Image (cartoon, rainbow, N blue to C red):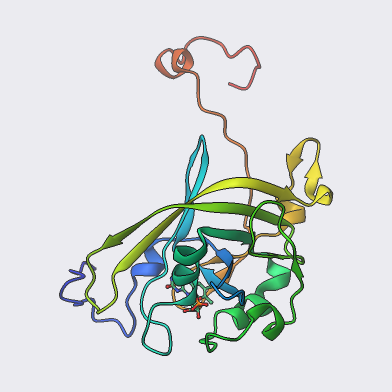
Length: 219
Ligand SMILES: Cc1cc2nc3c(=O)[nH]c(=O)nc-3n(C[C@H](O)[C@H](O)[C@H](O)COP(=O)(O)O)c2cc1C
């Protein structure tokens, strides 16, 4: 099938767009409001954009239930700080509670039964139950054209402090088997990890001259 997003002519009951970008990591973003109320919400339009410095982007789109902007971009604009808490399979149901349209004064840590742990260098607390946290400072927000009354926002942050639970580190690497990350698919579908495999880049010489024997005997 083919369709044109501007005409929404896919003929399916739901837009297949998010099912075409899978799996997506979930940025579980904690912030505080200008008057100090903690806030926590998941965003799957989220990713890293570079290493040096480590930088992430999160995209809050559409309205808050009261018709204004969502708490997350409002809080980031007001305070300049946020934390990315890595979502795991074990925390899926609690994460889902934090995605509900809570009134602005609700602390989603409390609503979901999660523990707020102080961060090292930013004000927003971390989700203590999450095994990895990225403390971030706001860099810039890009407002893109939108088909609704609310712009598409891309909020960029520099990672200034990283916390990794020591129990995740096996042989000097973050163990995916121990982390058990949660990812978002299309619709209301989620997944854990499937098969994990390692694949170093091929060497150019061997790619261009397959007749050269591989010193490792790997063929
Ligand atoms: C797994 C998951 C992923 C989500 N991803 C996004 C997203 O990328 N962008 C967005 O605007 N809302 C997303 N939402 C909805 C927000 O989490 C929801 O609107 C939330 O109430 C926003 O909270 P806030 O007003 O405290 O910022 C997602 C919800 C879930 C459960």
